[in-house]
Length: 376
Image (cartoon, rainbow, N blue to C red; front, side):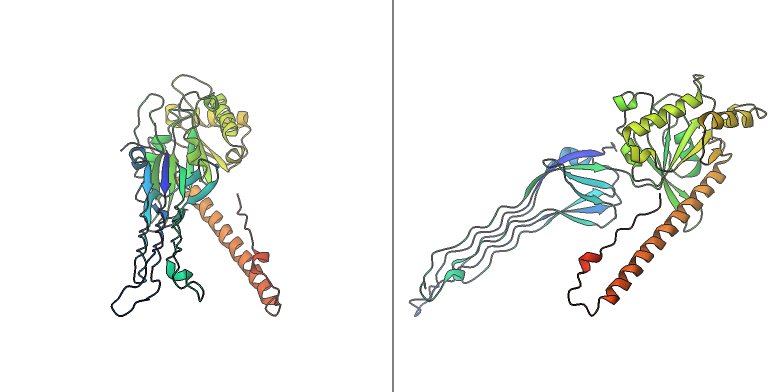
């Protein structure tokens, strides 16, 4: 299946049905009065997150989506039928943007999450609503209103806990194959990975995390060189970045300069993403003589002036990968624990404020909305 992570669509909600102009006509009832019913509301357009989808390719071939119109009102005070809502399934991780205003409408981050993107038109009123003591035969009705029509852009960003970053052929795809069940293409030439790959790393029956591998970067990527920065957006949802460095590149390039250029391109793309926790993973140590491995690794770390965690692995043989996976899992577990504690403290603080304000008639819940900032 072709991987598509951006798409533009047009959505249109249904039009509301018009109100009916009608008068009661029955035998022996010469002046029955107005009995025109209301129209039905137009159907709305909703998006639903679906974790079974991993691409936006469906929206490449169908770009227009319209909900059902509401029925017109009828005589005998019969209202028209409400138009059916339209539900469109999108992959979890999809950001919805209004192309006309560039407003971010929603971020679909959970399976089953429902987002309203176009509201259906309101129904029209029948003439029964306009009768009065001075106007017993009203001929006035109101038409249904048009449904919302919006030009939307979908941007899908994969949902992963950990993202792999590095030059082409640094061994990212081999690493994700080694620690998960993912089977991305692996070959001895650059840009083997052309689309992001996801792998679930399992540590037990109920313990796992998701790792994302994106196409490699090269110097000048921020100016469009290579595959550019198109796929870096898929790392924006990750909590942790693993910077994979080839310690023995086949083209004899300097691993330190390569790592520095990647860090530079990352900063050019997003200063926020460049400040995310990043660990150094020195890969392909099996290609070096055993007595030189420690020396080469220490030299790379020293020249980079690396202050964070460092892991020495051989992705193809699996050496060192278990220690890396265990460390990542411990870090993610600690982050989730800190986030849960922050939420619990915020809720407790809000509960105490509400308790103190129980007897205050002027208490406003909105005044005490709490924003929680999670640890990086």
